[in-house]
Length: 309
Image 1 (tube, helix red, strand yellow):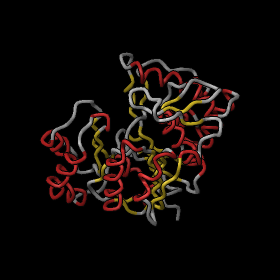
Image 2 (cartoon, rainbow, N blue to C red):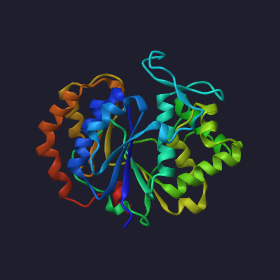
Image 3 (cartoon, rainbow, N blue to C red):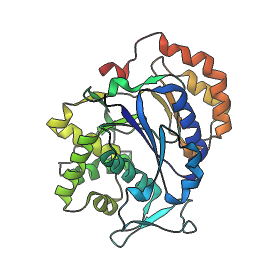
């Protein structure tokens, strides 16, 4: 038995959302080993109450190099905390969360990981046993999804190929960014080794110097270009999560409409934390839709990524 572990990088501002995630995991997610919360050291006391027999709160310093240190909280830009070093320009908490996903996947004693952001909420039961090693692992692959008028995503395509030493493809190109993402430990270790071989730098050092990158793009393009690891992955076009990526705050009615758009195979939803949608609104919408949404998962076999495993 090799149960999948759950990884959630988070921080103080997302405490309420992360609490809701943990409650939904405890209610709906089965057949996982541990749920790890990766938090800045200064936020450890805020998350201590979420620790349990199956949930472990880990300080960021456990996986960050000594040369990368957090700046004081009073030194912020757009309410973001930054980490500094003498090797590159300061990096934000958003960068550090990406480092932590990679470092924890490499270091923790599990072969498979399911990565969940703080703003994911499960509303149906989700059995992770089908994703255990050596079953195929799903790789979210949205072909031709990155186009020229998406400057950030286009740049991430470019930097991923530079860091991995591959020729940059022409656009449109594949996108690998989503919610409920699965990673394999051996693949992630090979990914960081590839970055270090290409850049002649420690992988965190290389990412600090690059700054404009996406961890999911790196993983996806590495798998896509490596025959040995592509064979243990199965490309899937979607994940079982209804996602809201926009900035406008959702009302309860709008959130209910979003939940009503879930198909019978969706098990979770995600409302981007930067939308500012209150947690109370999310809880109220869950309470209203719970009786309608939950039973649907039992009426048919899972599709999407689960159908491949």
